[in-house]
Length: 371
Image 1: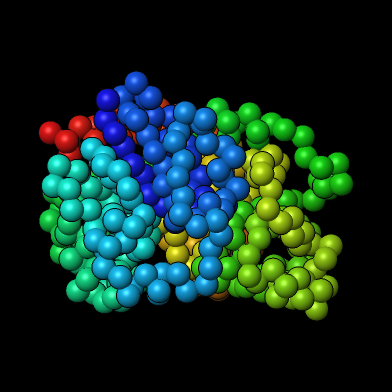
Image 2: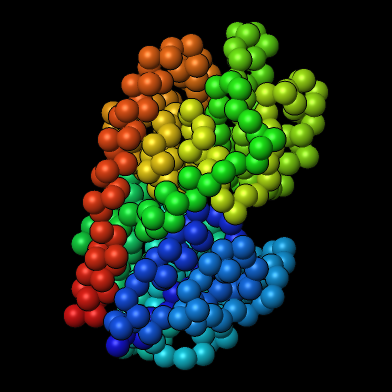
C-alpha cells in the first residue's frame, strides 16, 4: 500500500478544494493509505470527505498575512514543522505556499508532486515565494508537476523552463453521479422561473469579473430593454459593493445574490445559460459542471475553456474584455435559435466527460513517480 500525503491550504468553497475532495474520495483505499493535511481546519468541503480519509491540520482558522510570515522560514523548516511523518508520495495540491512547504521534504525516498491550477507567468509564478529564483528552485525539486489544462502547462513551461517531460496534464476529478442527482433537486419555490435565466457561481472577488458582468447586465436591461434574470451564487469580499451597485442601478428585479449554496447544481440546471466573466481561471470546475448538466456556457477566454468547450464548438468563448462579453451575451439573449443550438451541442459534449477516467490517470502518475 502506498502511503500518500496531500497538502492544501484549507478546504473552503473554491473549485480546486471541491475537486480535491472528489479526488481523494474516489481513490482506491486498497492501493493508498491517504492523509489530507491542510494548514487551516476551515472549509465547507471538509464535511464531504470520506471517513476513510485521514485528516490533519495545524491552525484552526486562517489569519491575515500567514503566507508572508512563512517567508521568514525555509521550506525545510516549514516541512519539519507541519509534516511529522514519512510518506511514499507527498502532493502539494495548490501552487504557491503548499508547494513551498512540500519542497522542504529532505527524505530522498519520498516522491514529490505539485499541482498547478492557474496560468502562471514570470511575474506571478513567484507569488507566495521570496522571489522568482526561489520559485524555480522549489518547483525543480518535484518529481512531477501536474497541470489541470494544456494551456496551464504551456504557460508554466514558458515561465519556468522546466522540461516538458516533468510536466503532465490531468484534468479535474468530478463526481458525475452526484452532480446529476443534485441537479434534479427542486429549487426554492420563491425562485419560480418566468423569464430567461442566467446563472453564475463563484467567490465574489475581483478575479471572477462580476463587476463588469453587473455593468453589462445593467446595460442589457436598461439600454437594450431585454427581459431576463441573473442568479449569482457565492460569497466574498465584494458582496456589499455588488449589493450597492444592484440597488443604485435598480437591478433588484433582475439580479439575485443567493450567497453560498451547498447544492449549486439545481440552480445551474434550471438556467438557460451559464455565464463565466472571469479575468482568469485554471480549468474551471463550475463551467465543466455546467456542461455535464447540459446548460450552455458563455465565457471569457480563460485557461482551459477551449478544452472544456471543444474549442468553442459547444459554447461561446469571447475575448476577455467587457465589450466582447456584452456583445456575446446580447447575441444569445436576442437569438432563441442560437441558444437552442448551443443547448444541443452542450448535451452532446457532456458525454465526453462521462467517458473520461481521471482516477486511472492519477494511478498512472503515482506508479510513474514511484518506479
